[in-house]
Image (cartoon, rainbow, N blue to C red):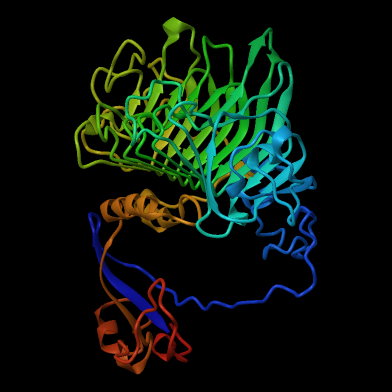
Length: 500
């Protein structure tokens, strides 16, 4: 069987292959599940009864990509089950044990090391204050929740968030956080002051004489999160390393994402940021500032920055006067799109587009693919991105990409194919607002589909021609139709034709 769609895009007409997906359902065994076993044992069996084996369970870091993929999260630790209906209760006042039969609140479930947090039901958890995670080996598995999934929000007064901050002088590590919605209040109260956030990673160390002193955070995966309505950004602050941020949806925020240190004392290194959508935020999509080594920023969509005010897409701020050290990064195969103003602000070196005091770049704009080694920027490899024609800062400073070890490399597609990955961003249960922003991004960067057809390729109907061309019009099966998302498969969606 063959199938194709007539489509059009800015690059012309092309073919989109379609697949009819057969859903095979297997019932979970009738034996009592062992709800307290973490699903990380390599036996391929659904030990904890949640419907997933360790090869596909979100507790396990092995199927993630990028530098954070070495994280094991809470593997092998105690499973704590959370009921969002309990609300935000102090651990000392929470009488529940955290077992599947007696689920506890989120704050108690996160009060200690070596744990996997799962959710027995969906719902909203309103934090009365920040939950500070100081211990290592923690997984927050939002994928375990049934619909509508888990949303974490805050109050107008306290503005709490999830705060990864080690004890002074300690190195905290191995975190996996997946499939949650973090919902701020900026849409309800846009006068929030800077400093109110929902997710912060703070490695409060400093580098002295080549030694790392103080605290550090490493081996972290932030995956399939929906983060919205936040006045002040999600931040990786000071000494943070071996992190993957993937498949996340950041939108409708004053500031989206920041990687920053201070005065050249704090290094962030080995960071993979891939297949995220940063949409309808004013700025910091992200902002990269001060001593970042080996950032692999690939296959992200940055959409409609400066949504309600001045702003920009990605800015690599480079302030040597403040003793900041430069940023070293691959910026590859990303899609920058806006139909509004500030199109020259898609990708900025220094403070403003074009040559300025902070970047000492070329006196005139260079094209993507040009190499300019005289600027004050760090090692930047910029290639394969779709940028507005008005964008100025897009040259590379090195002749090839920063080397990424094989174990940390990310599967990528050309930027004009990112519409194929956009529908998967964010948590598994998308509400109307999540889906709305995804739809707007898809309308902007995706193809226009004019028809979907099943056809008998390489048959007598197309002259036994295996190639896609106009002859295939004569091979369309008039009694067959494409199976669209949400539809039920019928005989009209199948064919027994062997070639295609």
